[in-house]
Length: 249
Length: 249
Image 1 (cartoon, rainbow over the protein chains, first blue to last red):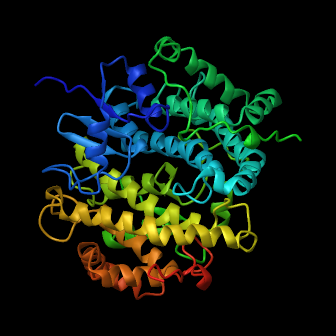
Image 2 (image 1 turned 45 degrees about the vertical axis):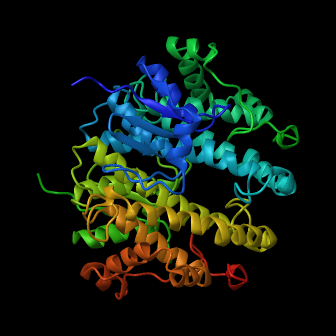
Image 3 (image 1 turned 180 degrees about the horizontal axis):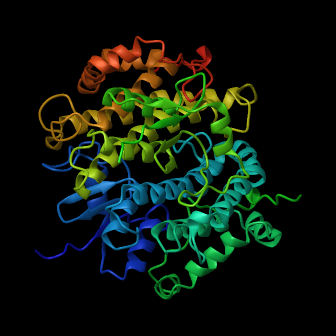
């Protein structure tokens, strides 16, 4: 049997949630393809009932791998990381859950809550119609939530279970490191002032060390400098100057 | 080696996120224990750096199982469902990801978004200080998001991949069914008017059939009628009469 080619279906002009998956595919060095808008629309359609093996899917990113079609960012990451040897020993349920826990927490703190900062009333409202609420939430995020999540990952890296070297789990590079990097990269785009303050504080030195270590991995570096890397825009991570709160002011 | 006894650490007076896990443990028929407030505080502490094998954890619910200590609701569910034979064949990565995708979507639509309806500006604000924003978001949820998520699970149940009978995946009862039930139970508590309208509309008959089928499973029924079942209160699922929007009005 030939090995399927993974297809990521997230045809947005910005990195968005698809980027966490794209970075994993790039790091793995595998060949992958990207789905079209038509494929995206077919999977996203409220008329879809899936196929013989796959249930319909709710929201992108979508992944096709042979006869498997799945969604949910942490779910796709779990699948691909095990497939491409970025998840330690996938036959050990304890390893699976320790890594999955880290990934889910990175996505909560540096993706879902970040999106909430410009869409506190939900995705059906225009940002322009909830600017005051967005500012209130962004202030709270930058002053309280960001330090809490950065402090959490600093403790993970300090703790014995992270092992030697710059990584989160057992001294080995895994998709949890990649996901944290990807999330922090977006967070920096949305809140550059707070990100810089956090870095300068020295309180999260191990987190920023990990960030740089992932950034400098040869395949990641090459990808980030390539034309394949999309520019941030109207996705999850948005830079509105009026929300770019300086936590020290 | 003796089998460890699972310990759920979520000492809240309301069902909350811990309830999804408690229902799985109850359905499995296994013996489990519940952690104390002191154990909860030690794991939640911002001074914790974990232990030799486990990283520190961010937020409850927490699960201890032998020398494993993990967090994140969908992560704990994944682990326990595989352990207690509620996840089909856990050695098949495709089955793992199909079920995990359904569980993550149920939690997004009927737990995270539900919490956002009374805490649109985040958990650090008092509900009383964001009543107008909560009402705007609740109206949108009840009119747009709730039908979208109910319609999604109706399509899953209609689709071929769900197989015969009332369940979501391949004709077998799994933890995805339990989680959907658990989420819907909380949603009904928060939005009884919208829930009743949805049921009466007949559009989501397969979803409500699943809801009743899980409710009537002997161990679930016995648990729900027992004193172990906590009453809804100030947790994820809250009934504020002023947010209980009737979508038809």
